[in-house]
Amino acid sequence: PAGGSLILEISEARKQFGGLVAVKDMTFEIHAGEIVGLIGPNGAGKSTMFNLVTGVLPASSGEIRFLGERIDQLGARRIVKMGIGRSFQHVHLVPQLSVLENVAMGAHLRGRSSPLSAALRMDRHEEAQLLFLAAEQIRRVGLGDYMHTPAGSLALGQQRILEIARALCTDPVLLLLDEPAAGLRLKEKEALADLIRQLKDEGMSVLLVEHDMDFVMGLTDRLVVMEFGSKIAEGLPTEIQNNEAVLAAYLGG
Ligand code: ADP
Ligand code: MG
Image (cartoon, rainbow, N blue to C red; front, side):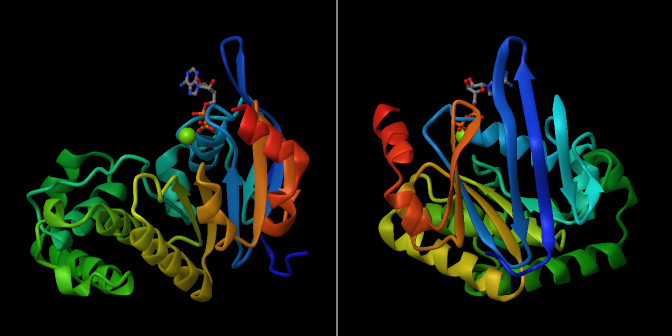
């Protein structure tokens, strides 16, 4: 069992889209410094679960607590400020802007009510602070050599890591990643896994939503498996690997 204190507590979370129940009665926890993988076949409800935790969608019922506080009906902006960082499944970078500009811009827009008010209210001092913060996170993820490189000329794996640097600017306690390894080559997946391990060593908790079983196997402390909106298994990666219900879900999907 995980020893750290409770970071995220999901109790009987449910999300309905009209007649479709995308997430039903999901219950699991994340402790401090843990990397938890949320896996399952396509359509299982992983991204919906991710959207409930990040506040993109309100839960239909059930409770989600972060550091003891209810967050299941809060908006995305509030949740980011409380300490849950996220990256996006599809890379939202401005290809012609530099790595530094992309991270600074992402960090800035995140804390503001709208891009327009952000642009109007930013002064030189604020801009300098922002660039300093962004540069710090870029070095943290190992992209220090690419500070002034246009984001669009980075390899896909580096762009994913850049997205993580952006998420780190909000100083999260818990980081949520939705299919960060999708489309990456083996070497890029290894670099991404190394970064996630480094963040864990720095005290971060991580919820990793992944379809790719191989990627999560060597990386996560614990796996939660979903199928048709429900949790069908939970345990150590080595236990899950041989779980019959999980194998059937993957083969059947
Ligand atoms: P996964 O990420 O595991 O592939 P999703 O959470 O994206 O699964 O989807 C779970 C189910 O919910 C699917 O049947 C999907 O079509 C449905 N779904 C997801 N988002 C919406 C939405 N905004 N409106 C209606 N149905 C949705
Ligand atoms: Mg998904």
